[in-house]
Length: 124
Image 1 (cartoon, helix red, strand yellow):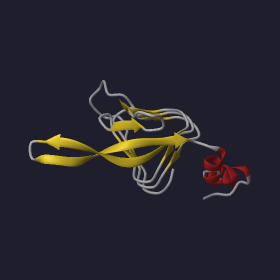
Image 2: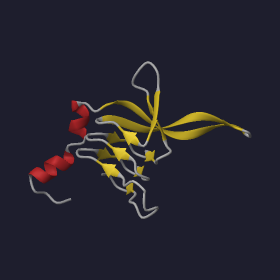
Image 3: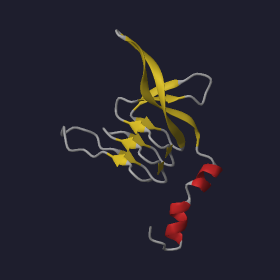
């Protein structure tokens, strides 16, 4: 996790689902994950990504966008985005999360600092 990351817990309501972030994820600076969102193993959340239970997650890796909520797939690379939405007062950009790729070996190298620090016993 980078600096300023916000991870929400579950205090109420009693039936609420906990936030789950699986192993080997990279969470960029100022990212926020709350309201029972699940981030699957190896996913990369870019700086400033906000994920709530109602945040639209658009997978734009294929020919057509696939819309989901509440879960980030394994090894997905996610950045913050906006999509247009019409309201009575006009059309405005509403925040969403964009899945733009799948974690690659080069991404693994970029996010491997923590592994190197642990391997050599360096405290950070």
